[in-house]
Picture (cartoon, rainbow over the protein chains, first blue to last red):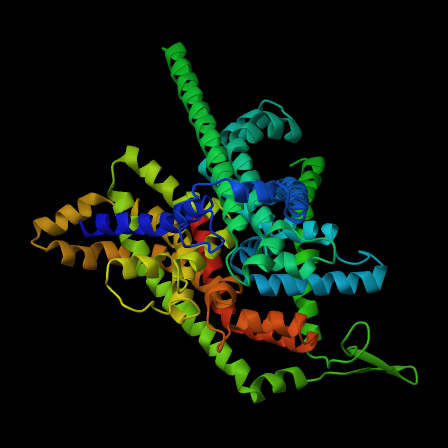
Length: 277
Length: 297
């Protein structure tokens, strides 16, 4: 009974701030938290947002960085997850396992500082990268996102035993064919959720990005942070509402897709069992 | 194993290892090395490690950055303050998260996935915006104060923002899913027969919980607490937006040294000192993670 009460209270705690942001995004008053009953609800902050070139530009930059980072993070993370789940005790295993779990908990200020110092050292040594900007942000994002993808892919792979892959090998399939015909379909849900996770983390990151960004490469979180540091602004509420709606839609779609996949899998298994009778 | 297959495996493991060596490990070595330099007005703004005198190299190691950290009380106090904030927040997270995870693990399987989704959903929305939402709630003329004034619980608005309390709220709020998920993964595996056996032997529910459930869930408690504690020590956004102005946390110190004072050696030394205290928790976390990922098969 106690634990159920705490669960309800905890869920209220989790959702009240988000709901209050949504409600106040329709408030007419500039004094964000004072409800102006006479002139609300209004969509004026959404209108203001649509004409805010700085926010739109930053959002577009963030989307492009997140798309590229998530894609590369998925490729690298899948390779790392495969190696950790399937290759037994190879040389460099401890190193790889350590380097893929550490970034998940590492305080972001340290990761950000160390990556910037690397870029500075590299540009002195080999003349690349020339200054910081979208490229260095993307490299940094790939690095911390791939750690999460690795964990997701690895845990999905350890859930399946290797017998399917071994059977395909025994039947003479080449390793690449085994990967594309057996392993990849098995871990596709993990790859999809790993990509979404990486996209969200990259889209959302502020601290690491601030270190490796340069003039003219302000991402959306950087613009939001510089606005809210000095108080609450109503157009940020409108932006938050749009982002919550997008995420909720995305999650709903991916949940339905996963459910359908699982159902189809269950039906296939039933058919296979029936055929064996 | 065929030779081509072996080469393929080397490639699969080698690419991510190489990437992480260049972009994760070497950067730390650079931080370590710069922490033993002195700041100077040049590009780069620190002294080189090796200098050449008449054709022979000599190693130049400066301890000044570290000495500086131990002479100015600002650094020690923000260091200790960060540890305190992280410890208190982790404890609060555990006290709230444990019953929540327990309730989810005991719920009907059909409800369970919905509850888990509700826990994870906020995590997918912007972290920065969720922290920002608390400014609107905690401000002097914010939602909480307005509601309490309206209900005549208080006469004067409470100062909630820019306090330790606001930072605890912010950290617990942002990191709660990280506490609940490992705890849930652990609690879900428990065998209810053990609790029945304890009840049959005459144990009261609380005794059964204390003697059976709690000891079994220690790995989950450890994993969840580390996932909250380690990043919380270096937290930057939450204390900057919600926290006190007279006492800053160590993550902010690092950032300010780098961006405001342009003192790269001191910023690097701060990073090394944070790592020094986190090395044991991080290794514990890696061990827990390894068990979780490899023990499953």
